[in-house]
Length: 95
Length: 508
Image (tube, rainbow over all chains, first blue to last red):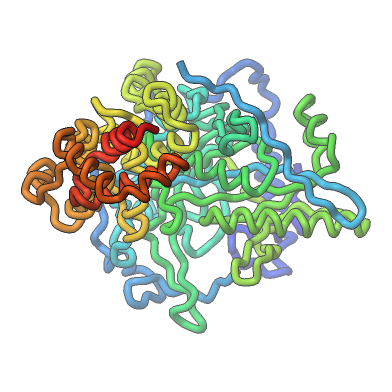
């Protein structure tokens, strides 16, 4: 599978990564290279084999329904580029 | 035994300019799981906290933070599945649904696309009794229920240039309950959501508070020519149906109905004009009463789902599911059937009393060991009527079930009349107290001593010979004597006894 320039532009936009138009051909080439490298895996026949989810037999960890966290709005907001009155402040988004 | 025989309602038909059209509706209901902590973090789910106070670093998607699933939320989803007679999947898995929005700090929502925790189930949507007295109801098939995270809240009206984001809701557990397109009209859609809400509240898995957004629905609407839907049902082939549009995020039963009606007419107008429907996401504007396209959502629809590498598959044991099944409460359908069978209540009364679990519990406390029909009349007409008038909930009722039961006991033993009972109820409502003591203290006791009543009847008959002649000519006028006797005895005489005695003395 190869990634064309339009796909590279679209993926960049969906990930909200700014990529200059002149950089797109190189990016598309690199992404195609990565994908074709990964495609070698398709040569292995995995019919009837369940996908492996963990290298060691483990059960999904669970937590109790107890409030153990929160109450730290200043810490939550401390890395925000802009915060006002306890909220994150972001450029206007409106439907 | 639960009697679940019912007749399916007719689909809603809308006459366009050229032809008749039928509606086909499917719903995705998002129900907030009733839990203390969030789905993958230990932050609180309490509504109305200070902005960003209920946020763990997991919810804020700080680098390196890992989700750990709240087992109680899983149990709640299983309980809901059991309540909808659904298949429980012992193995499910979490996926990432990727999209960009300021109130979703992770950049993806953890959901269950490929392997949901609950599979196919069903809901019987009661539309009330038909003209022949038989229950009209629609069986709506549930396709699946999956667990997922809620997003945060964006506030757009605090600043002209900025949106403000509160992450308190981010990561709260939701159950998305997806129906098959089995709903055939706006009223049915609202009734379906109401029924689901009722079941969830009985189960205690969601508080059903629509105003706070704890229960909201995405509504899929399409239209088709009569006959097409039957072809779909026979084959389950969607190509027989029209193209659908999805109306997002409805949190009012009234708006759901209005939006479906508007959307169906919009689609019919396009089709009759020779156009075609574009599958899209739309938003209902309650002020204008119309739906409009959410074009911004279109590109975002490329969600690039993939299994969440932070979470192993969710494996649960059948024994654990059985433990949950062993603690299931009686559900609304069963409770209503029991009220109709055991207490001899009408379909309508049984529906009213079982609508909310708290009301049903109250009613049963009143009806226990007493006449069910009388209890139903008093609870519905006197108590609910009064609560409604004063905008109180059953929990806030000034009259307890024990007090109301005490009133019914006094009526049942013939000690007080119906009229006195209403006065007594009024005193209990405003002043409180014990019914028997109040009745005794205020001289509320109907006279059943036939000697005293007989004397009063004789006196009135003797004093009114002209009325006696009239009553003998026309038996309906005997009521006048009853009224006079009741007046003479200060309303304390038992009307039934007086009636009987007047008729006998007048030789009627």
